[in-house]
Length: 233
Image (cartoon, rainbow, N blue to C red; front, top):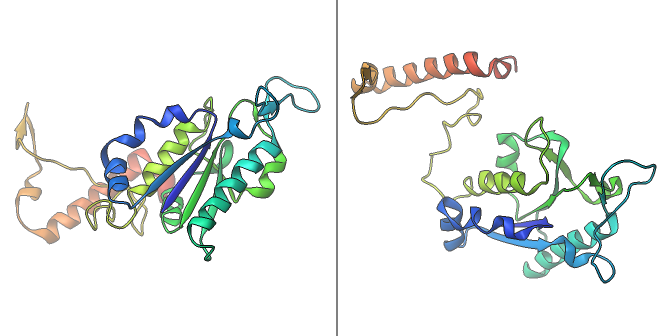
């Protein structure tokens, strides 16, 4: 799979993609992460990528023509690399006004051949770019200075779901992953006792059916306590 990120600040990605699971996935050839600098498609001597909004207002808006050129390069380059065979490509725009990002998105994106992520910036983007965007995604009800951090999160959440990246079955019981979408049950490891806090006896019993029941109960309990909205679904 390939993930292409369109950004004004490619240097922000130097660290996050060079460690841990993503690094290993890259070394195995399971994921290819490409950074395209939006400013390369800017206009004039100063490579302008933004302009003042029509109708007035504070801030600058990323230009539709500049972003469209960057998207087209990403799409055509991958199609050419794939030998012009049919491929599954999707274009995302990171935006505070987009749909909330869910684990179901990550699962869907991990089935694609190519995912293109546009990092929004400044006051926003020219609305006409939506003609060339498949989905507008937000990582929460708050505003960041740009889409770079959300793009990193999406790349990480998608990469770890690719076959061969992590141990088979490791993602099945995670929060938001099961059929019931409950939060994951609590975990314990050595030491057995720490400052008066003991590992629950059931986990030491060896009774796998009872352990599974206990984990299901704790999962439901935690979901009720911290994310009751999930139960309403």
